[in-house]
Length: 308
Image (tube, rainbow, N blue to C red; front, side, top):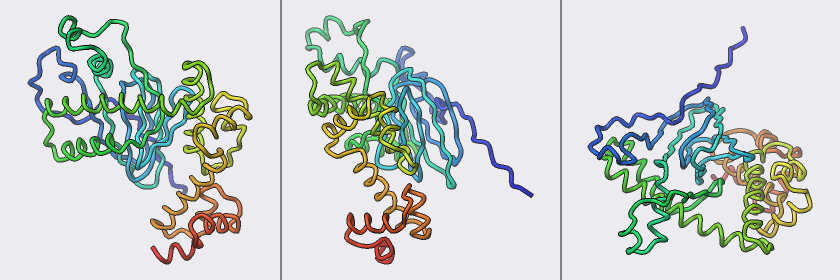
């Protein structure tokens, strides 16, 4: 008898179990807002719009589609999505994947940005937020260590059920400021791209990161340079030339590195054969895989596993 495959659960993502009684003022942005989602599932699907948010995962990865981008989010990185961005999330794994996501109240990032730009005199005269001010972040996966440690701290306190609203509100403001600091670093990275207009640099930077994220999401599949350039909405030659400027390696070099790093993880954490791992990560030839692995790590896949 054929086993029925379980359908992915559809869950409203902007819900959580944060049930402490709030004593914040009625106009406080965090009072009626659910800032944390902590869940675990091996099959999951959700689609819709959300708040400005940080997505993190352990024991596996989730695939997001947002705008033109495809993002694989796993351990060691986080995904940042803007306010009201339409997106979908899919998890299909053999073992449960743990998610920990943080959502920011609307206009919190703008409030922090305004307080960093304005003088004390301006803030005293006009404490409110300018009506037309908005902040838009580059949607991609990040690996900022300070933010990662802050998120880890929040998670530890949250899972121990010791969260107080005021403490959490302070952490959200600190995180929002950290995101803005990270956003400033984006402009430093953009300077690697040869363009006269800042607006052109930013658009090219976003599209190149869409291509970069596409490789990260689908490195285990037979993708080609044309597929990646198409995902980034760039001509193949323009994408290749600009990608090297921004990341310092070619798309193919990054693809191979991504596959080899995944092979290391599988050799350390599973008992799959070297051939099975080779095919699972996107290589077609076990001999080619072993040669590339040995050249990169100065040892063969089999010997690497023996020494784990």
